[in-house]
Image (cartoon, rainbow, N blue to C red):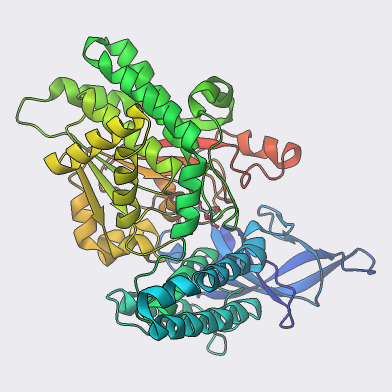
Length: 520
Ligand SMILES: O=P(O)(O)OC[C@H]1O[C@](O)(CO)[C@@H](O)[C@@H]1O
Ligand SMILES: [Mn+2]
C-alpha cells in the first residue's frame, strides 16, 4: 500500500480487491472504510469514495485472483487503515513501497550526486574542463530529478539515443492510458516497480547526456568496496570449492546431492547482500555463509530444491556425449552474491550435472549493486590476481571456462526495462527464444522475483505457476531473499502467522525461497 502525504493528498494503495469489481470498465467507484489517526485527531471510522483501477488484463482472465490498485484521496496528513468493504484483504498500514519512494530512492540519488562530486578531480585529470562541465551538468540534472520525485511530479518521456527509449516511452503511454484523461503517471501514483526502474534509467540518461561521463558507472565504487569488504567470506567459499573439486570425481550420487543443496543455499543467502536495500550503505558478507547453513534452514519458506535436483540428475543420466545441458543464471548483485553464483556454476560444470552455464547481466548500472558486464569481467580478473591461492585458482578456472565457451555471458536491454517477465515473449522475443534453449533458468534476487510475479499483491497461497502468468521459456526457479512485500506459493496460514508475530518478515531479508516451476 502506498499512502502519500504531500500536498496533493493522494495515495495509491495496491491491495487485493474482490473479484466483484472485475466486470465492466477499468474504473469503478467503490466504498472503503478507513480510520484516520492523524496527529491530534480522534480515531474515527468513516467512509470515503475511492477509484479502483483494475489491472487491464484482469477482465480478460477472470480466473486470476482479483488484484487492483486503488487511489484513495483523503485529507492529509493522515495515517490510514483502510479496509475493503467487500471483505478483501485488509489494506492496512504504511507500505514498503511508500517508504522506498519517499526515503530510499532520494537517499540513493543523494549518494549518486555525492559520488560524482567526490570524483570531480578524477574527471578533471582524465578529461580536463570537459569532465568538470559534465560533472556539474549531471549533478544539476540529478538534483532536479530528486526534486521531481519528492514533489510527485509527472513522469516524463526519456530523451536520449539509447535503443530502449521507444519501449520506455510506450510504457509511459500505457500507464497514461490506464488513468483518467486528467491525470498523469507520477512518482507516488504509479506502480512502484515502474517508478523504481524509471529512476535508475533516468540516472543513466543524465550521464548519457553528458559525455565524457556517458559510460561512467556511479555505483562502481560501492560495488568494489562491498567486494573487498566480503574478502573473508570469499576466501572461505573459494577454499571450500577448491577442496571439493579435488575429489569431485569420487563423489557418489548422494554426496553430490548434498553438495548441490549446500551450494544452492549459499547462492540463495548470497542474495542478502544487495546495496539498494540498504540505500547504498555497506551490506557485505561478513562471515562464511557455509557454517550458518543449518541454522538458516528454518528461514527457507518454500524449498523446492529436491525438484531442481531431480531435473539435473535425470538430465545427467540421460545425456549422451553429444548432448548439451544448459543452465542459465539471471544474475543479481555483484560482490559476494556473484561469487556464490560463480561457485555454484563451477560446481554444476565440474560435477558434470550440466555442460554449459549462461549468465545474464545488466546493460546499464542498475539497482545500485546489480552485475554489469564490466563488473563480471572485473570480478574474474580480481580473483585471478588475488594473493590467496584458492581465490586465484577460482579466478583462473573461471577465466578458462569463459575462453572455452562453457561460461557464457549475455546482456539484454529487457532486464533494465520496467516490464514484468510475462511480457518478455512480446517485448523481447529474441531473449525469450534464447532462454527457451535452457534446461533450467535460475532467477536470482528480489527484483527478479517481483518481475516474475508481476509485483502484484497476490494472496500468499496463489501457486507460483499462476503468478508467472504464462511466463515459461523453460523450467525455472527463483532463489530470493524476501526484501519486498510480494510472496506466493506458501501453505495456507504460513504467511498469516508472521503478519502479527514479525510484521517486517517480507522486507527484512531474513527469509528466503527456493521456488521451482517445471511446467511449460
Ligand atoms: O538485489 P535484489 O535482491 O533484487 O533486491 C533489490 C531491492 O530492490 C527492491 O526490490 C526494491 O527496492 C527491494 O525490495 C530490494 O531491496
Ligand atoms: Mn539487485
